[in-house]
Amino acid sequence: MKRFFLLLLIAGTVACSQNKSQNIAESVDSMISEDRYVEALTLLEAQEESAEVLKLKETVHLNYGLFLEYRDSNTTNMRDKMTSALMQYVEVLKINKDNEKAISEIEQILGIYSTFPDRQPNEDVMNELRELGFNV
View 1 (tube, helix red, strand yellow):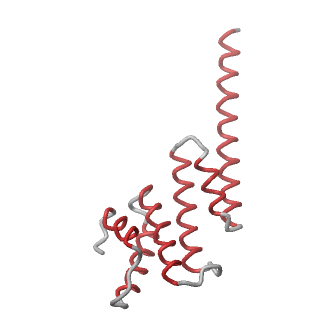
View 2 (view 1 turned 60 degrees about the horizontal axis):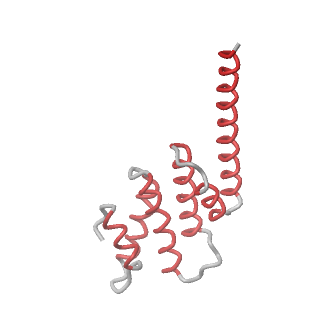
View 3 (view 1 turned 180 degrees about the vertical axis):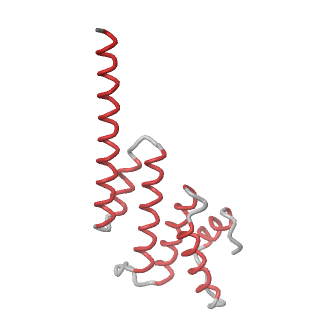
């Protein structure tokens, strides 16, 4: 009888854990669709770190960077926009150094900067990019 209750307790714990993970993923997806990236990241920071939480953070940072780069109408200064987007892509690569979309977007932004001889992203961003292996 004790084994049955122990088995039931373990099964209940696993089921609750899976429901919690599913609810967090659904909440994050909803926040991304509503461009509520800071809120999504805050929710994820409050979670115990796991492979799933890291994957969700990677997704949020990537989508946040794309939003800042292409759709943010609140920031009109292009340097601020691109610096903010680059910082999000850096966060993506800290989680997954092989994220091709983040690498591609960074290379695109750096390519645009290279056409302006007297302009570059903020030095903090440049240092982060160097640490990740970008030749800037």
